[in-house]
Image (cartoon, rainbow, N blue to C red; front, side):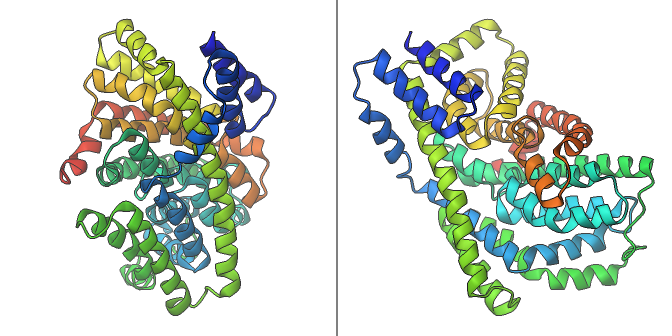
Length: 428
């Protein structure tokens, strides 16, 4: 009965348009009030204490670092570098957008932030060159999802905190899968561009090694960021949380003293933007933890794990069921809520059939990254449509080929563990 109340209230709230965070908190509150003798103050206690976590401090600092880097001219320099590398190819502007998103992903750690930073420049540029509007906004929307796969990644930090898994190992594990998804999206954009006759960028009619070296020099401070962050973590110099703080300090130094594009107003706006984003994120995390705690109290994760393992003893079948479930969940629930709620449920299931927790973390994040571009939630679709002033319907139709390719990449990553585990194994 208690379980019915928990999920029944959640589904009702979701259907009538109540925000996800509030839906999770209200459903947990209703389940405790009507189904148990526990004090309802337990919800508030769990919501508050869930945020008292040193690893979770990395999230606001990575968000702030990404915002400051975008305002400090780093995204423009990454775009210039990407343009010299792939701008000469068919559909050059779309390929430049994807490569720039991959570069920015290694800085920001957030999907929507990557879409906003790169899409704001590139969507109008593509439309001006007669690219289809839907395609122009679908490219950064899809490529922006790489932001949560390539380290540093906010969802990987969260998964590590919830699942008690090494964040450093998860960061290493995300590198090759992120590159795989990026290359697959580039190939898709290339063939679509070829079929539609999109020409290379006019500024880059041919590949020039000299231009690449010049762009590399201009972007050197941006390219040092992932080296400092990942090198510091794996060199034992600082933790992922301390790495995030280091990234903020670095972004301020580069933006103020080197690029000289960060003034007091830009810094103030950056802090305010981070506060708003982080407040929303932390509310979701806190109520998600309350919801997950109540599920654990009612032994729902154990029941689901037992049911799935009884359903089939075949690891391949179990993994396919879990992946299908994650793809459906990603369509309706945001990544952070899904991570906090589903990690305690699914991690015991997959580890019981021999899947490494680090490998599963990558599968989980890649599957939920696809949710960034699948309606009706599709956060990246809305961000891309908003910054590019393109109708959401056009973006949704144009993104379908990219979704299919990303699902194929997910299956490859899931069933070839070495793609995730090879680099992660070097840290253990």
